[in-house]
Length: 549
Image (cartoon, rainbow, N blue to C red; front, side, top):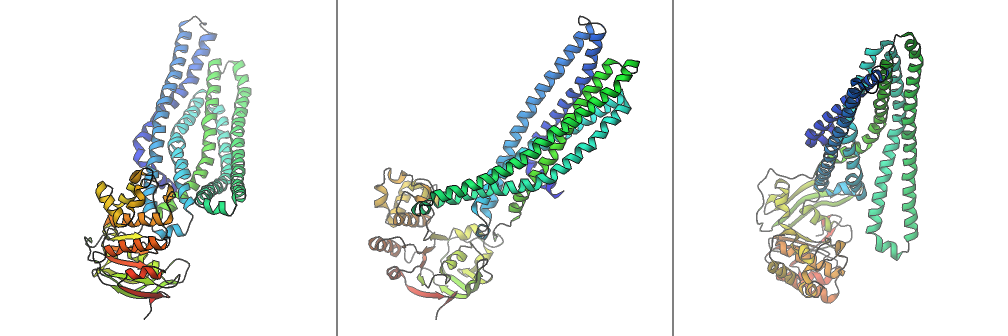
């Protein structure tokens, strides 16, 4: 029942189209149920008035009309349902993307990024196709099967009962097949997600793969993954392929048995040729929806895997927004950590009772060994993670109580590993404020000592820098990141190993740019490089998650 509720929730925005499409399918079922009756009329016309009689003309016209109505309704329902499927998939992708974007970073530390990509590229399509195609066809299939049985009862109740006996056999076969299909479907979806994750990771690690000459091994690993998918697909296809023909054979055997039993009644005059033709056509018509319902059971078991994965992701709680407090406007920049404790999942404490106060407008150098908790200070200040204990305050206000967006507007970050977009230099600098004018963008680039190298690029500020800024050097990437942070004009600036990829001259220019900002903002200068500390007003050392005395 929970699966059904989740599916209805995902499909709810397209409920109108789905309902209308299902109604049209019911009209198609009604037209299909009229065909055997018209077939009886046509039989009477052929055996009675002859091909030239009025009965024949009426029967032929009625048959043509039923086929035309089926074609017209099938076109309309197909158009509506395909449109609904596109909308369901698009809406689910946007909803899922927004939710994935709102999840805390800890969620992505527990799983591969490719798993999230598989949700967006595979599972949403599986669910959308099932809802708009398979699920809405249930009512028309049941109507067709029920109508065929009722009409057969009207002609020969005893034979209709015999035909109906075969129906439980169909569902027994479906049940047996479904037990095999569900675990197969779940494994197949997991392997497909693994293939997406592997491709995403390897393409991102391509420089490492090439320098270690591992192309052949990685290709073999990916090929083995695809072979596992092909093997599971073949096993799933064998079940589907066997189920349909087996159901059709049992249905056909039932029709043959009915024909054998009815032949005596036909000879004795208890059953007219027209009734026999109509009965056989209804029996044949019954075989189609019963066979489809058997397939439906297997498909339902398969889609439950995708639905489970989507539900698990959607049930993950987003990062707390802290919307109950007063928004921060332009902060003065006084920062205080009081007894802050924090540990990354599966690791020891990164901060263990940290007490640290930074005055507004102060440039604080933070040093210490790797793993001491230096970068964690910046992560917690921006609320990328939440402390397990203690408080963090800006201008005396606990940051856990203010709206998240207003907090992050106060903070600019230049990380050691720069993250840039596949876009132009201008778009990357203006990312925080895309409505800015070119003069403001250039001013930020000059302040970051980036203007000179930017104008030397092929298209200057309009040069596209590639995925993650791959067309720039490491130092250029970091200057661009500083320009982006300065353009945001935050009262608090975090420089996390921001000069790690500079040569001495580049580092000196970078530090001059930082000195120009002193007094106007609070700066946390996290570094291992002694030269960078020349820009600091004060230096503290962090060890084992605490400030050393």
